[in-house]
Image (cartoon, rainbow over all chains, first blue to last red; front, side):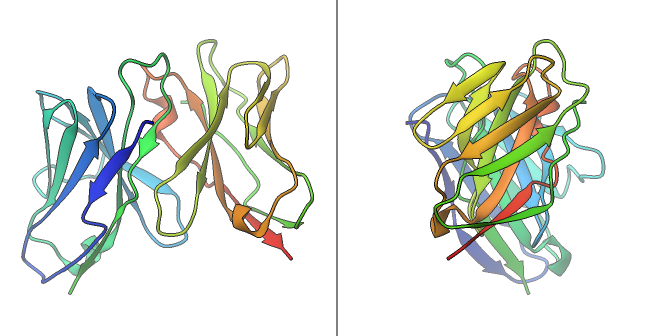
Length: 117
Length: 111
């Protein structure tokens, strides 16, 4: 149980284009979902918290106009990297908590490898 | 924020028991301790969670002393497939504490 599906698993795009990444909780509902970015050999860095039905909360230093987050339902959050540049190339990972489980741990998707050329 | 400190890396031979300790000196009363495992190019995977004393599941044990200022993840009889990065997070779900990852411990299992 507690499966988070993330799509696509990898994407290559040209500089200046936008890319959308989907994160779905398959067998539970999540009021909040979390988006992380991870560079090679480094730890995960929290980018933003996605809130169902309301605006996302961004961590300091993360541009909200560049990383658009939408959380339209209790099972789906999307991250759109707008006007992507090579420095946005990274591994993006989403996670969610099961809102029905007391002190639920984070359940992670398998990540999306973004390469901007 | 309950900051965590772990060894950066550890090596172990196959079949040995591995213990990874995490320090969290300013853990709050309501905070739980959660451990995750991450393989390259994959999202982290939940291993175990505990509040105090000892917790055991099918893959690991978690030892938490009475003062809760540290915790130890114990992996019995590791195999090559246990080579991964292990992270401990401390916090409670209604707070933001357990969203922030530390450096993690890179475990390398040697044949």
